[in-house]
Image (cartoon, rainbow, N blue to C red):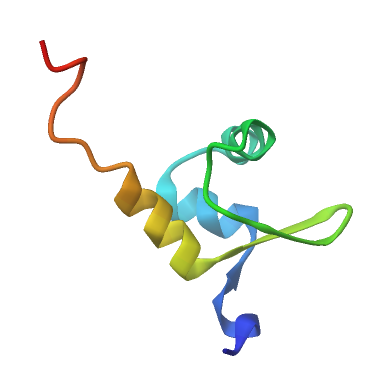
Amino acid sequence: MEYQSVLMTPQEVSQWTGLSIGALAQLRYKGQGPQFVKLTPKTVRYVREQVQAWIDSQMQTQSGGGR
């Protein structure tokens, strides 16, 4: 797989999802966001397919606890 063509910066994911870069950082910290790759201690990238899979997993059919 050619990862160079599918790796996204946090800025690109932010534009795609509408989440702020700070929100993405918080999701990484909490382990709740899309899977990511740390190429260096300060370089984070996302694999496009993993971001799409995370978005798909967030789909809801209703809000609340179903009561």
